[in-house]
Length: 414
Image (cartoon, rainbow, N blue to C red):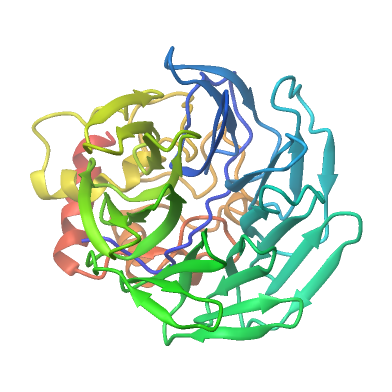
């Protein structure tokens, strides 16, 4: 089974070879809601504004030069988006246009998280979490905070206005001083504000903890899956996992209310509707899904369904390929997906698909894709085989899974 080595992976997307449809061409990475607004962002570089009731996209912004990993809504109504290109774009959601109204620059690595100052504090502050190890606060005055030992994966403003961050070093810190509120042995991947100047934090081993002002912990029931996104509304906490389900917790009692069972593919983003009656989720299947919070019933799906995998192919390989199918088509010709088509991959030079805009490293084309080189890619990982690329950092640690994937690709890509 594929194991994601970087649970906060960032996938930089290409320029498009054709005008894309109003759908995400890769996993949905971020969601934000407000009265009259539902926005999603994806690994395909797109930010989409949805007409949720109609199930259609109202506007698609494709400005970022890489995957968009975070969204936030500022007190003045502007929408902020940020991602792999290290830039923050500010949009007017009612009339976004083709270019952002303002661009904020300063991070020297991908941005993994955004947070806006809480309601009642309309000072314009926007915080960002960077893989360059810094937390930045943008507003009347820009501040840069350092202290994390490694990438910063999430930021959140408590309702008392204090800024918190969570990082790959396993710490939760408070700013501007950098005080360590809590420290864990494994990376923290998600952070959310909880009423009462508290914070919910989660990481790679699945437990969700609620931290008080003094760091005192309330541990919620462990869903058993790595958690990568959190959202809180009206006493309910939603925790999204790489296992494909979303846990809903009662914050007052710390008990698990119910599990939202999805497609089995990773869920990367969660956001409650303004009335807290609907939970929106987004993940590897490229769709935005609505759920009834009270009952757990699936209400709707926005965006196109994933490309169907041909029937009659190696069943184990078909299972393993599901993770690849979020970004790669098996069909010849241009695709709206974030990655290049895999049709005819064996014998093709790396970076050699006409019409696809590769990252500079892949465009060097110094590898010919064969069963042996593809097996090596998933044995050692793209970060080792092709360092400097924007391919996701994942491996297939099980030799049987690698063999099954190769059997599948040899059948499906001819």
